[in-house]
Amino acid sequence: MTLKTISAANATALDKDLMSVGAFSLDQLMELAGLSVSQAVYKVHPPSQGKKVLVVCGPGNNGGDGLVAARHLSHYGYKPTICYPKRSKTEIYQRLVTQLENLDIPVVTDFNSAIKDADHVVDAIFGFSFSGEIREPFPSIIEALERTQVSVTSVDAPSSWNIESGPPKSGPGKTFQPTALISLTAPKPLVKFLNGRHFIGGRFLPASVAEKYDLDIPPYSGVDQIVEVDRSGQKL
Image (cartoon, rainbow, N blue to C red; front, top):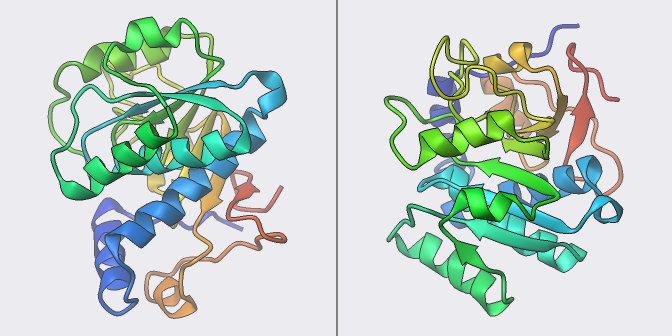
C-alpha cells in the first residue's frame, strides 16, 4: 500500500471546499488542527518526560494551529510558552492570544532564550501554503531547530521544507529533521523525506471530500483525533 498524499494546490482547494460545501469556519478548522497537534505532542512527549513545551508560531494559519495546541496542552498539565515574534493583527489570532494570556501562558519573542528551558518544541512556523524567501527572525529560529538536542514536533510541514521536494538544498532547514510530524487533514508529498514519527490528524474529513481528492481516511481509535502511520500509510 502506498501512502496517499495531497499537493499544496489541492490542499488549498480542499480547505476551500471544507469552508464552503463542508460549512466549516476557519475557527473550527484551526481548533480541530490544534487539538490534533496537542494529541500528537502528548504521544511523542508525554508530561512525564518534561512539561515545559515551547510552541514557536509563525504569522499565519500554521501559527494559529500552534496557539490552539498550546491552550490544549495547558489543560493537559503542560507548562507551555509561546514564542510569537511576528504577531498577526487579524482578530482570530488576537483572540487566540487572549485565551492563552487568560491561562497565564507566557508569550515571548526571543526564541534562543526560551529554548534553553524547553523540554519539547512545537514547530508551528510555516505550513503547506508557505512559499518564497524566509525572512528574519525565522531563518535563525529554523537554524536553532536544526541544532537543538530537544525533541521537536512539526505542524503539517517541517518549517523551511518544500511541500513537494522536502528539505531545501541549502540555507536554513537543509538538515532539519523533526522528531515527529503531524500532517493535518492529509499527508503532503514531503513525508517521503521524513525520518521521524508521522501522525495524521484529520478526523473531521467528510468521506465525500476524501473521495474527491483521492485520500484515504485512516482508522482512528476510540476518541483519538490522530493516528500514527508508517511510511506506507499503515496504522502503527
